[in-house]
Image 1 (cartoon, one colour):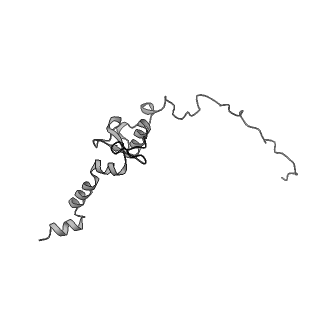
Image 2: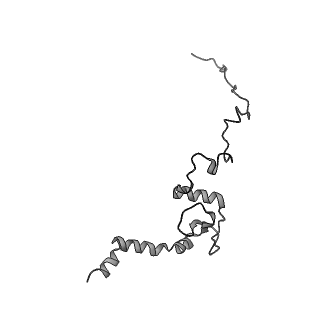
Length: 131
């Protein structure tokens, strides 16, 4: 079918509902709706949630101050778990800069201990195991 210049389609400018009007309040999705968030949501996993999702949830609950709790340096901060038990207990979390987070978790020593235990630290294995 060919159209002549200036011809308008029959449905141009027509919508099934008026601008800003909702079809049904019951079926409308409401972001952050208190009725379907948290434990009331059918997909709620409690403390059995993954590490990334737990960090995301805690971050939303306590907010990001953009300031390290220990050295008070402003900038990028990371969520740090205080006792190593990853639960939804908000008092068990703190915001630390990367440097303080590594010191707090003793990450450097943990890495070396793991390498020595697994036998992947070449320097340590050569120096102390060969006689």
